[in-house]
View 1 (cartoon, rainbow, N blue to C red):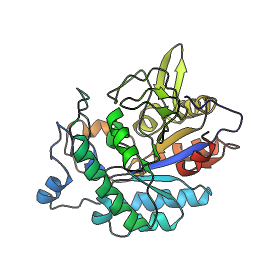
View 2 (cartoon, rainbow, N blue to C red):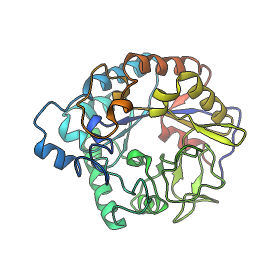
View 3 (tube, helix red, strand yellow):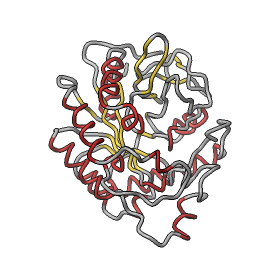
Length: 307
């Protein structure tokens, strides 16, 4: 059953905590330079931390705006960036799971599983344990690395006690799921078992991302890379339109606002990071400023609005 809109819909602010080497051209995909982050650190001897500084600025921005957000964190951040997860949690933000090392769980091209359900279960339980120990919080939310999500993944998440996922992106530009999305909008909903299509009820909820619909064409406007490529005004239009359908999601990465140049490894990296830093930070502030009157919450609080 779809969660229909009302006049008091809220915007969930979500932050994906990953560094430059976590993207699929560098680590954790069938076409990456390194198989995974363990492989990366086995050979990488140069500086790797481009995450801590912009993350502290994100936390400061949220503090100044009196916003509590959901931080989807790659669990290996706990080991590689001592104290960073604890710092975010101590600021009162929700900590959620973004995988063990940000490896893709389904193939970006074929959408076939890259891990068995049992392997996914073991890895996700390990990631949750790491994050819970560091944060002191119960972890109930998940976001698939690179937003590559399959219905079978939500089945596993449900069996191990996750309450929600936020990975599904309905749009006409790209497809990152292994399931049809007929009947799915940007509003929260219950997914079918073995699928991402809507169901009447279930013990796990999906919080899909925002989009802007024009003449049947749906443009992804939830943030992330689109925040860099589309600009603030289009993202803002999509968020406002999506808020008319129900609670919706805005997200970005701290490395989106990094002032520094990242190591140039991996295919397509110069274009991918062509726009970032102060420009993107200004866009984030502009979007938050121009959504006055809209309550900005973390996803665990958005659960209260679900029948």
